[in-house]
Length: 232
Ligand code: PEP
Image (cartoon, rainbow, N blue to C red; front, side):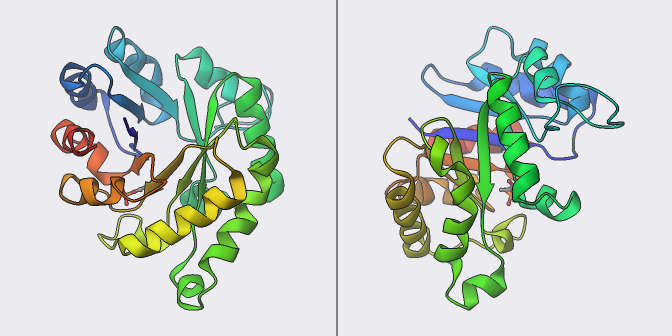
């Protein structure tokens, strides 16, 4: 069964918990579903999902456990709120927070320290893909988790496919996932992310080595998110 992780990004007020409840009610036994809400909703969503098989994740964290880091959230806080997973290295964080490999190494370490599973995001820009350097670029990003390949989930998210409605060809997704599998070995679950929706999920999830999806926009409505789960 595929692992489907919803990344709500900076979306969702209390009223949005109703969608999470609908996902919890609609999830079938054996579904592997995760919702990563904004930090303000984690505790409430933990309660909303209680008793269901839908798990909770954070979207990012600080490398430190606690301290003078105004506005930030630690991996321990995310775990304490009831989460199991934490996204790290999302292209929006690499861009907006200027997260480089050193920062990301600290965050991955923190996520493991807190007992959470890191969902480590990688992916190339359009420029890099057009220069036929996507696989070598992604391999470079993966160096950071190569030594802990059996403790992370990797999400391949081409930056140009995030929130754009554009999706790589299944041949390109297959080639990238084969390349990641060759580099990381058999133990790392590999996800695809970038404009996944109910109508294209079955095709994407049938690509060899694609073990699930990281879903942004289409995770905000229970109907769409469950539609992707059903396609899996
Ligand atoms: C994401 O941000 O992780 C993502 C995959 O977004 P979307 O599904 O909206 O492209």
